[in-house]
Length: 245
Length: 248
Image (cartoon, rainbow over all chains, first blue to last red):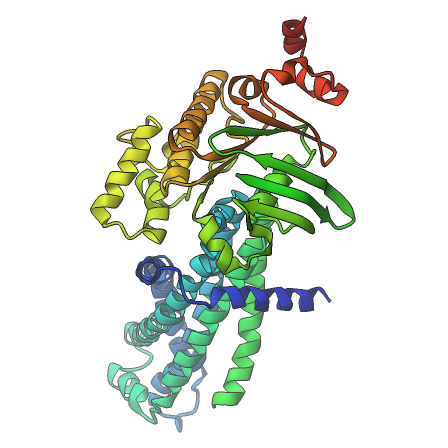
C-alpha cells in the first residue's frame, strides 16, 4: 500500500514538475549549472571505472578462450558488446544513481527542511518545477554523453590490458572491435541511458522533495533515492532490453 | 489590510486553529504572540498559503486568497515578503544573488538596475558591501538582515516574519526589531510578526494578537498588554521573574 501511495505522490509531483518554467532564461541557466553538477563532476568516477572494467572484461574474455578454433579477435568483439550493451549504460547509470541521486535528494531535502523550498513558494515560484525540471533535462542530455565517453574509455581500457599483458595483439583486438558491428547497439545504449537518467533525477527529486523533519530525514531520503533509483533501473533495464532488442 | 475570517485548520483529528478571526492593519507592525504549540506559526503559514485552511476566508485587501488557484495566488504572493525563522537563504547563492533572486524571477529590470536595487536593499539593512559573501560566512544577525533585504526587494505590500529574533543576542534582536518597524513605516507595509519575545512586544507591538490553544484569546497594543487582566495572557507575559518584577 505504501508503494502505491508513493507512486501516486510521485505522479502528482511530476504534474507540478513538467509545466512551463517561470522564466525561460533562468531555466536555461539552471540547466547549464546542472550540466556541471551532474555531468562534469562525475567525469572522474566514470573515467576510472570505465577503464578498469574495460580492462577486466578483456582479460577475462582472453582467459576464457581456450580453444585454438576461436580467434583472438573475439576478445575485442566481446569487450565491445559487453561494454556497449550492458556495462556502460546500466552499470555506469547505477553508479550515477549513487553519486548523482544522493546528491539531488540531499540538496532538495536540505532545502526542504531549512524552509528554502517554502521561501520559493512564498515568492510565487513553483518549487517542484524550479528545482527538479532543470535536473531532469540536464540529466537526460548529459548522461548519454557520459555513456559515450564511458564506452570509448572502456574499449581503450580493454586495449591497454591486452597489449600490456601480451594476451592479445593490438591488431587482433582492434579488428575484434570492428567485426559484426551494429550501430543500433549504440542507439539502444543511448535510449537506455536517457531513460535511466530520467529515473535517477525524478525519483531522487521526489525523495528529496518529500523530506520532512531534520538532518536524519535528509540522510534517509538520500538513501531511499539511491535504493529506489537502482531497483527501478534494474527493472527498466529488463523491460527496455525486451522491447528494444 | 489582511483579514482572517473564522479560519479552522486540522492536522488529522487535531484542530490547531479554532475559528480564528483577526485583522492586520497596513503600516503597522502586527504581532502574533503565544506559547510554543499555540498555533501561531500555523496561522502565519495559513495566511501565506503554505498550509491550506479547512474552512474560513483569508482576505488580502478584500481579495479572497483562500479560494484562488496556485497560479492566481502567484500575483498576490509577489506582493508578499517573508522572513523565515532560519533565514532560508539559498545556500548555493551569495548575498547579492539571494537578494536579487526575486528581481531576476519577477521583474523586468536590466541586470544593472537589479544590482542597484540589491545594493539599495543591502544598504537599507546596513549590509553594504556584503554582496559576495556566502550564507555560510554570515552571522545569525546578518542572515536575518539579508533575508529582510530579500523580502523587501520587490517592494512588498505585506511582510511576514516568523520569529525574526530567535537565536539572536538581545542587542542584535533589538536591531532586527527596529529595522522591521522602520521598514514597515517607511514603505507603509502590512507587517505580521510571529514572536514570543517580550522585548519585541513592548518595543514594536502596535497591534498584538495573543493566540492560546488555537484561539484568539486577546487583542490590543503594547500599552494595553501590560495592564490587561486577562489571566492566560498575564501568565504568558509575566512568565519570567524579570517581567513580574517590572510589573510590580
